[in-house]
Image 1 (cartoon, rainbow, N blue to C red):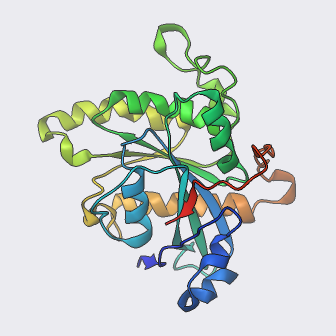
Image 2: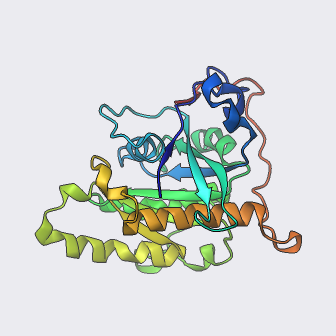
Length: 264
């Protein structure tokens, strides 16, 4: 599988779409069908580095904090190598902020959660709290975070039934694998393995500073491709009676433009 790289999309306003912002040299991409994938996780876990790696096939040298939301695009061949092969582009929406934010901040983020086709949940393998917070991130995005601390149940565990009827494809990615000493890796990866089980999702653990972690044919690359295929399949190929219900429309706050949104 050869990675196709699409130049970064730049936008200065809320009304600009990825199609409108494409450079002239990539005008053909405007005709491609698309899917929208959220990238969620605590600040500092490496979401921006991950998205840059996925979309540009490059290591992000000086990552900065994401304010609002940053969107980049990856070109993906659905069912590559088969008669059904078709090219799509994947919009990766890197949502900034903290899951413990005030309700007003959560309401601001809600505008990014409309019409989502898939979710990548990102946590830092060296930070237990970031792993635990994935439950709260997913519940917020799925519009089920009605009570900020209500997702916790007895003994500090989470209720799996809250995710049982979810039909949005999920992928769990653990970052900063390189920062875990080899003698500790088995212990850490065993501790985080339950995340994928709880979310009924596949799991990828990687180092965003190493291009080889997503090398063609590797286990990680296969899992990633399978996830994107599933997102596309759910969006475009399910029979009408079995289609995934979209996220409910949310009221946009203030009625003005959202200056913090940018495409990068």
